[in-house]
Image (cartoon, rainbow, N blue to C red; front, side):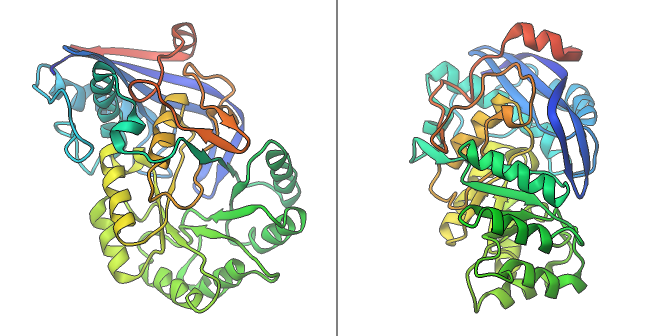
Length: 375
C-alpha cells in the first residue's frame, strides 16, 4: 500500500446541548476528518481533539495544521503494509507529542486496509461479542438538571450513567441520583479536579452515605498526584470493590504499566484518540486483560465514524466496565456519518467492512469550514 493523497476536512458540527466538564465547556464540535487515497483504495480517519487544548495539549485546529503540515506529507508515496496487524500498525512520524493527530491517520490507513480485504474492525481486533452495554455521560450541571437528564436517559434505555463532578458538586449530586435511580450503574468522572488533600472526601463519596455510593470513579486526582490515587485505592480495598479508573494519567502502555506496578489505578479508561490510536488501545486492553484490570471504552464526542471504532474496541473481553458507548446523536445534532444502532440498552457491534460506513457527502460539504489536500 502506498498513500497517494490525504484530504483533510475541518468540520464544525452542532451539539444538542453544551457539554461541560471541569476542564471547560464545549458548545459546538470542531472536528478533523481525513480521507486517504491509497493504491488499495480509500480510507477515512477521525481526529477527536476538542475545540480547545483543555482536556489535552492538542486542539482540533492545531491537529488540522499538524496533520497537514507534518504528518500527512510524510505518508505520501511511502510503502506501508497492505495487511497491518493491531500490534504493528504505525504512522510514520507519529509520536507521543501529538497522539490525537496521529490517531486520525492511523484510523484512515486501517480503514483502507480493512475495506480492501473485506474485514470489519471488530473482526480484525478479535472482538468476542456482537453487542455491548450502552453507557452515557452527563456534563456538569445543577443537581436538578442532572437528575432530570439522568431520568430521561434511563427511560431511553441507558443502564449506565457517568456524571461529571468537581469539588463542591459531588456528594449531594450522587445522593440525589441514588434516591431517584437506585438501581442504575452510576460512575463519576472528576477529570483530575481534586487535590491530594481531598482523599478523605473522595473516599466518602465513593463509598456513599447510603448502601451503594458509586460504581466507579474516573481520574479523581491530577495525573501527577499518583500518591493520592494509591492512598484512595488502599482505603477502598477493605470495602466494596470500586474501581479508581485512570484516564488522563495514561497516554501509553508504559504509563499504564507504571501506574499498575505502583497501585495507582484499579481500572483504565481507554480513549483511542487520546492514546494515539486503535493499535495502542489494543495494546492497553491486552495489558489490562493480562493483569485482571477492568477497562472501559472512553468517548470524546466523536462522530458516527469514531463511535464505530469505539464500539468495535468495546467488544474485546477486557472491557469489563460499561463505557461511554452511546450513539453519536446523544451529543451531535447533525453528523455526516451513519450512527451506531442501540437496541434494548445495548449497542450492536458494527460489522461494516473497514472502521465504519461512508459519510453523507452532502452533510460533509455542509459542515466543512476548511479543506486541504496533501499530495
